[in-house]
Length: 178
Image 1 (cartoon, one colour):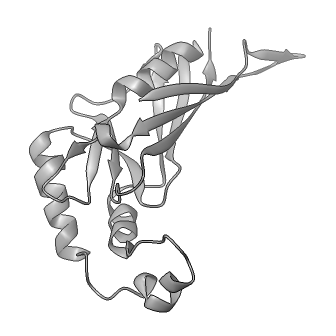
Image 2 (cartoon, helix red, strand yellow):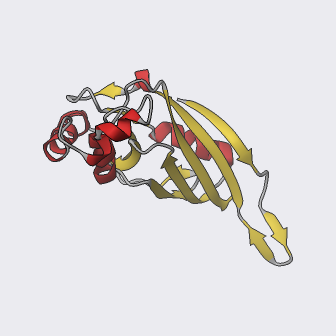
């Protein structure tokens, strides 16, 4: 992953007796070829917990909230266990039972694809993403660290990695540096 800081204030602002918290924004560029593979060639994943922790360290926020959001409709972020059997086998197999590739989906109708050059037949990827990952996740920061449970990790899951060399995850941190 490449981390790019887009905007960062230097310290909390004070207006009268009111203290405003610091805001830090960054983008993670995830190279699709670096994703781990699964039993489905249509799903790749990466544990991005350490990259998120690096962004938190760069922000100097000690207490606050971090919001992590995928910039794509067929890739998302989820908090779960980064155990290979779960992510590489169980998840893809369960999703394929509900949303298999090749089923007749309205999103993949010929007349729509004909008018959208380069658009793949990927309704299954949209549906898998909708049901497996939220649009974004918000996590607590305590003592400049993610407040995750023992087995929790921040996972990026791509349900349509074909012909997409880079995926982007946006990170916003709001909190207190004191």
